[in-house]
Image 1 (cartoon, helix red, strand yellow):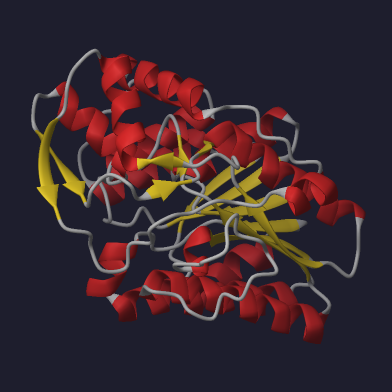
Image 2: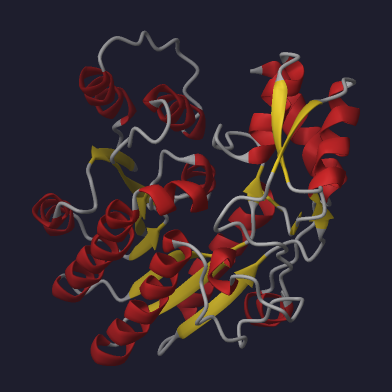
Length: 340
């Protein structure tokens, strides 16, 4: 099958493409190498996902990406430097390829930046997704796996969070855009019979993690003997999910879509283990053998206090069984960080 993966040079996307190719599938990677963080990281992700070990000499962003597209192109892989807001550019890709399934991971991520740039988040996350849905209709692509987020739960009072819980009270523009995408997905399923699974990811971490996320940021700053920003009293908590388990969930969702029809499902993908900020920091300190220098700060607007995934539905519907506990996951992450 030919998979179109949006955001395929990012953290989750590059791991997913690596696994799809190993399973013998063909992949079209659509990524705009957004300036949210250094584009060189995405180039390195891409090369690693394709097991290309050659030294890449960086020069100019557009030239580098053009060269990357050339050296990575093969019979089973194509990279397109493409923004999902550009419908005409996407249309060309759809028209020239027999796409069997879309796995839509591309988005502007991050709660705090979305408060500063809400209109840009709406453009990318909502309008960009609508472009994909429209093109799936036009080119008869009937299967979509779409990345949502645990952020849609806001400060949900009931834990663990269930897919049946009310999510009408997001507390950031980012969360609101993800809720919009879920609703739009249902519209296109109902009107155009597109089979869709919306995956609510719970705080994904691991090798190739984005540098702006807490685990990476803390690890880097502690290793450099610099202050870490420590928000609140340390009791905020997250259901951290290791990248390998998330990839298993995506692949099992894709398999479920391939083998079933009339599907619209929302599924939590988490580890079902809650770790406080203080516990997370302690685990990183232990693996680095160093003590953090804390800069204590107040909680930030938009930050949820706790996330915890009920993964009962994921277990029963797609056979999702996460296997990496937080202690082992942090050990693997720190080992990767120190090697790179």
